[in-house]
Image (cartoon, rainbow, N blue to C red; front, side):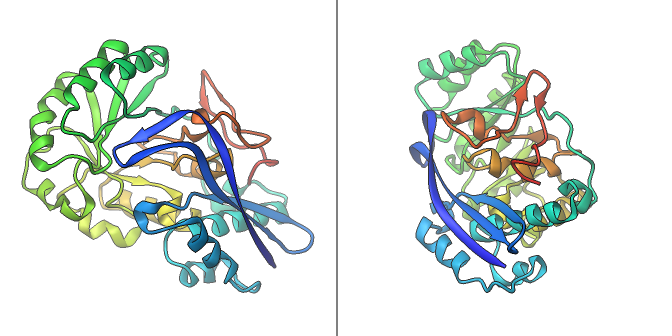
Amino acid sequence: MSISVVPEQFRLAETFTISRGSRDAAVVLTVTVSDGQVEGHGECVPYARYGETVESVMAEILALPGTITRRALQEALPAGAARNAVDCAMWDMEAKRAGARVWDLAGVPAPGPLKTAFTLSLDSPENMEAAAARHAHRPLLKIKLGTPDDMNRLEAVRRGAPLTDIIVDANEGWTAEVYTELAPHLLRLGVLLVEQPLPAEKDDMLAEIARPLPVCADESCHDRVSLPALKGKYDIANIKLDKTGGLTEALALKQAALAQGYGLMIGCMVGTSLAMAPATLLAEGAAFVDLDGPLLLAEDRTPPLAYDAEGLHPPESALWG
């Protein structure tokens, strides 16, 4: 089997800002695996928060032997972006070899139309209110926060979208004191979920302070090894393929998290339809789906995933799986 990887950039429709910074393009790595007759494709987003760069992830991928199997891959690389792209490419190749859809190979239901969140990036209250009004027709808005001055942003978004369901993501940007102060207002404004309010290395405080609404682990949850440390602190686990290191571990993490009583969010980095496609297999039974990466782009793969009034549709086989 041959393995190749190329870096690509896809322009964003608007600047995307979270508490850690801004970007104007999605920088991804596209992996192709081939057995000489059939090709499979996968995508990952190297993420600096987890010590990844485009160069380091490419080096991990290119160091893999051509004899690697998907099972052996789980031990050859750690959970992260490099393993994700190769794992998903191998699933794609396996499905094409079998002449089947990948959900049949994985033994999971075929994805139906999925209600997905749409993310509003961190901005001034005025701009966030205007963005919320533009997207008030969507069923679920995810609001990027994570500063000490978020109360005005929350109020502004609710004014802009008075009837829309809202979840918020602090991206580790709050302290326990800030979260405790904001929590009653999150409830008052009808927020359904708060994602990663505290830094992962300082989240023990979540076991000591009141959690009046569900708290979701993102940066604190990577793969099954993460689950014991979430106990008593989180209610929901956010599964992202770039954290789990691919669909293989993500499917196992989903089963383990559900067995331990966690609710699920299926999330994503800012990537293309190729990155979202494998994650649609995880969405059955999830409390929240956040697979809006392509909706944030000015350009995408061909064929792209379809988003319409029914939601996010499963990928065409020409895209993936």
